[in-house]
Image (cartoon, rainbow, N blue to C red; front, side, top):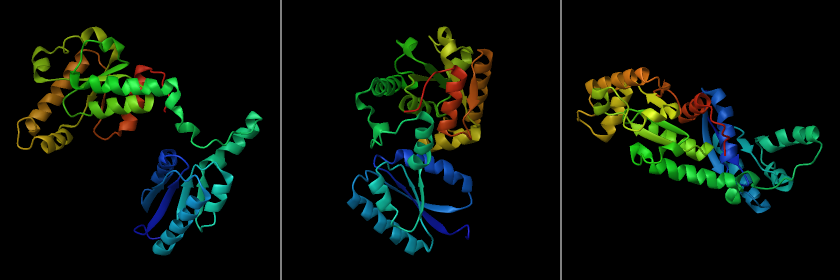
Length: 276
């Protein structure tokens, strides 16, 4: 297969399709030189919808000249069997993993559709919503009064990745993450912003390569001192110096994904959290 040939990959689920897509992406990244056209089809809960998927899969195969790949988390055997009328490579995560678990646990699974996303009435769901609201209310040092409630407080220069990391921690792990920028006044004093010193055990720093910081800031404020490479270099240098002198753990976000950053923070802060 030519590495420029595009093969269609379908993520098909009886729920949102997020699980199938997330797990599927983990597999596809192992074949980095290949090109994939990715299609997510959620809420396939009837045989009719499964037949519609069969039609679309067949059409993609004819268009590509290659068998499509179908990654699913379908639990209904009739719907799953209907889907297999298409000529494709099928990877069903539930079929792959449930049978060994049933054998080991000695009981049959419930085969309940959408159970992993039925958390609307659970305490975990409300904890996650609380964490998201907390992170939004404590973005960019907006509300310093109740920082004792934070699980972690991210610090770093403006545009170093604090806000997206905070929201990801809240959304995926239910972590109450606040964030506070380090600004030139802090560098002049070489001290943490007021109120953070007594919460040092909750602090985690993010830094970034000055060149990358300049690119990000230029998109926001082009041709400004704020975005100049000279200023970016100075702020990054001073922020790292301040974090080092204050004994704050920190990592470079330049080449890391949000997922990697969040996993590192949870490990470093020793937060006992699970993915929702």
